[in-house]
Image (tube, rainbow, N blue to C red):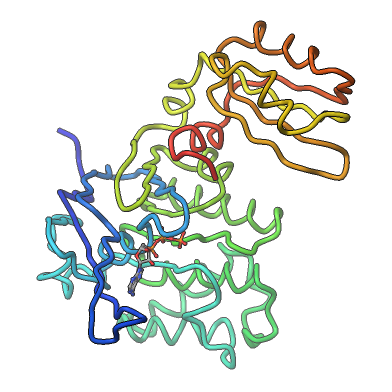
Length: 323
Ligand SMILES: Nc1ncnc2c1ncn2[C@@H]1O[C@H](COP(=O)(O)OP(=O)(O)OP(=O)(O)O)[C@@H](O)[C@H]1O
């Protein structure tokens, strides 16, 4: 039998906001509309979608911070609305950015403060805090005030904070936002290591590469609705008949590209105006038929052209409908 740690069934969440014009009038925003999915024990599960898709709202409902308007959620067999007291000690969450840390306290004292909130005995804290600082590579900065930390260091301290109660499930909302590529890679290594040790991880991200590298399964969400849910491999497989062509062209206009490239061979086209010319990104299932049409544009100069299998980002663009 599959062991589901998280079971979300037909969940909706509506916000009521004051209309700007008529202050007394209240408008409804359906942030999450009838979403259902399950997460298995030991998975790294990604929630991906454009701005405003409903990812943070979903994470807040899963972590007992927000009550669904309708539908049911079960986390570790508990109802986050009615049984939040039993659930909270068993989960933890890390929201992106620099909230949730006390800048005037040292890294060690921050962790000790949160450990006290979880009523973790001092003897346990004295062992666990150095271990966590070591896991996130901050052992040498343990006594430094957080206000002297770089963004990457603060984010790693957030991870240590999120692990202080040894959660069975860790939720992360855009964990690598604002991190440089090396710090982001370090963060992924830490998350993989945690997952190896048995922590189930749910994360939202806008970085397709990160999701592809880390996640066992991914849910695409758009406008509050679930678009698809699958492994990154299976998602890419869905577009295996598509070739992605990227080329840089000069001496031609966007209008000419639209006129000369037959739409029956084009599943998607995006044109970026850059200093070096027009960068054209195309999805096609007929590359042999499509490419000769480019050369028919009078005077066109094709500077470079690459053909590749679709990446997760290409699948995302195809399914969500453009960035
Ligand atoms: N407190 C709130 N009051 C009113 N509307 C809200 C509130 N929080 C979110 N919304 C609205 O709900 C929708 C979903 O927002 P949410 O923050 O969940 O999206 P998201 O996928 O996390 O977006 P992003 O990637 O930009 O963080 C948006 O239309 C947003 O404006």
